[in-house]
Length: 114
Image 1 (cartoon, helix red, strand yellow):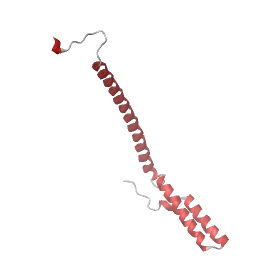
Image 2: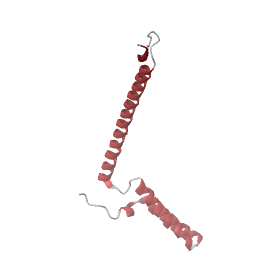
Image 3: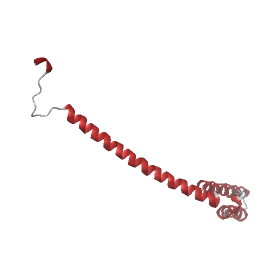
Image 4: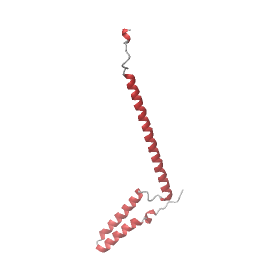
């Protein structure tokens, strides 16, 4: 197993940029509560990074790419099978409809009249 990077969130430059901008806005406007916007922004950037798979590392990216490829392959196979199933159901329905209606050239004699 590959060693995990426990401090991956410290390497995100976008999160640091948002936090520094919040600190800069706090210093410029002299409002202490503005730093909370920087902290919330930092956390939001990390959240979006996690959603996008940024904390996975190199092997995680490879596994994610393989899983996505397998998912696409399985969905294509599912669509192919469902198409074949629908085609077979249409054929069966057409054959049943053909068998249920009598041909116009044949005279059907009821079995009781014979």
